[in-house]
Length: 446
Ligand code: GLN
Image (cartoon, rainbow, N blue to C red; front, side, top):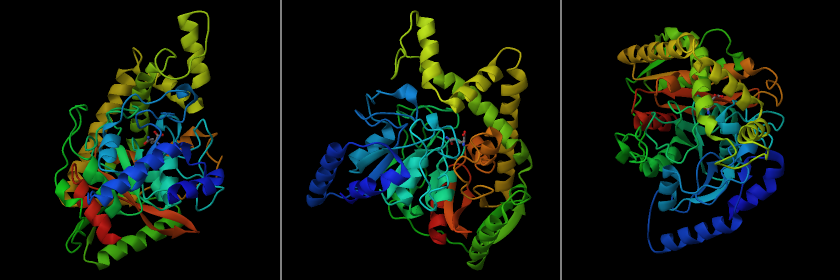
């Protein structure tokens, strides 16, 4: 299998995978061949796929980029994985990732960072670092990541691939390790919007095992994606996203991409999302709160690693102390603080109110335009080690990706060009459940 050869050759440099099972992959490939020979067809039959290491694939390790998960194997398939397998996709690897999907660079992984294939001295972006590198480096045409605040879109932009954060609920979260449950969603990564659509066509559809899952309107248009008509399409450019702080090279690339859309008949309209300035604070208050609650289950009793100690209490403390990395600890502490008595109203509740204001900004904007376009990130891939000592500068990379997440909207990141040799992505954001039209738009551009 070409995927396996390529991984064997490039992994020493890229570190994009977390685990492989050659025998199982080859068996799945043989099975897909047999199905193809019988004349069976599906958009992903025989297609190699890389799975982020927070997705359950029955029997395979679920590492979550963490020491605390060592030795743990999935007892069942995540719904998205099961649907891909049933449609004949061939899993070739689990992917490296930031610990419990928390990070913007891929550097918060217990097994060391994945590297950006465009420049090995730079980060690939995170947290779905390995999934995105796998597609960029040709391990597989398709990978699954997850996106809570930008985790497929940001690395997609840094590595020149197309990545979709679907409308919240459009893909089941069953069998996906929870980070921040009110924002988590599985996000496919591929070379083009067409390939994303093919993957989405087999994975979408509500799931009785996830009460927040919903059906995706227009799903029948995914298998044979058509380009969206650009003539008369109103594309909103939020003033707050094109102001100061954007690297000049990035701005140049995005302006050229937008002009190309305009040349095809789209209309560019300036709009405003006035509460964007509260987005990072709101996002990090809500996510750390949910993280502190979700990660409470990793206690040495039920999943993975255990550090032995005399009493139950000291065992739990020692396991968590040894098992979690710095960023996970930072967020657990911040979250526990935000949720504690006396602070809950001042922080968590206030953040929920700000979230509503951010959602209203989008509702108003979509009264004027069909879709919004923004940078994915103010800059390009940064050097490894550049931001690990400064969490705030790391968090600021997420400034444009967290707003659609907070509003539960679909958002897509697609390659727009290069600045000083590094990829730059354009983010397209659509109204709730407009995922299919968003993909059709990206397809028209590509
Ligand atoms: N970088 C963001 C964070 O660290 C996004 C993470 C994600 O989407 N999983 O929270």
